Length: 284
Image 1 (cartoon, one colour):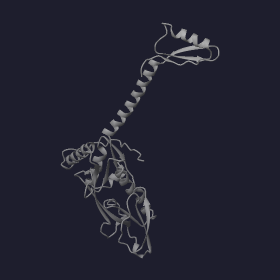
Image 2 (cartoon, helix red, strand yellow):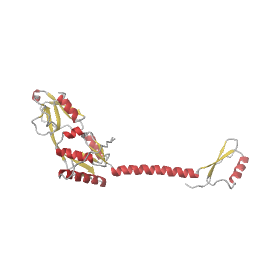
Image 3 (cartoon, rainbow, N blue to C red):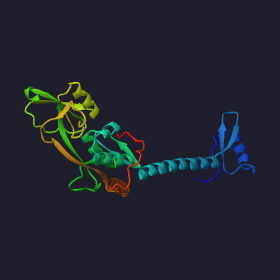
Image 4 (cartoon, rainbow, N blue to C red):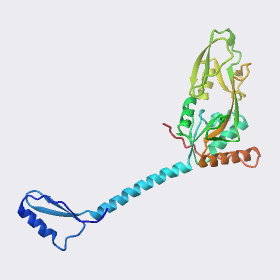
């Protein structure tokens, strides 16, 4: 962009042309001007535009630069973490101390965005397409440009039923399971009707009301509830979860900080502190 003179004239007659040339020769006319001819009344209007164009471009460039800088800041500082289970304070109360420390430490980490309650397949799809940076999942046997936390959390998924329920006499049983998890192979001879649950709390309410016969949940869920009993079968699924991330410098720093913080909790030299408010984000 230069401040050169831009002359735009609509010449209607030879007399108008001579008048225009006379005006253009005037010394007081600014260099960075545009001339417009309007109508048959031979009105000529000069509007300076050079400086305004420069200021406008500076403003546009500034807005673009600030937007890119803000996006870069978000990319540099935020680690997007996805999880299958919706982590609530009530759900945390049902965990063992080791399980609770894992999730409380993760929730207390700064610089992370949290997306939980994601279906199992969708969670891994989002991770594969890099729409999330990290997920709480089984560490891959052969990492493909991924890294995982040293600390892991183990869950044994058991079958629960109401105390005294004679399930073996039934031809079919309704089994409640988190819809975000894949269905598991169960050691039951009856026909199984699967009931996908939004949350574990929904499963607790449904099995208590007799709406489902069996609930699949982690082993310690009903330790203080005598009305619900664990069925005499081995765990239907055992899983060890870690924080699994794409191998980037930002994610390495995040996992290192997570492991260090959780190590201090295990060694009794620190605590997880007060969990910061969860920054939940929608993931497309």
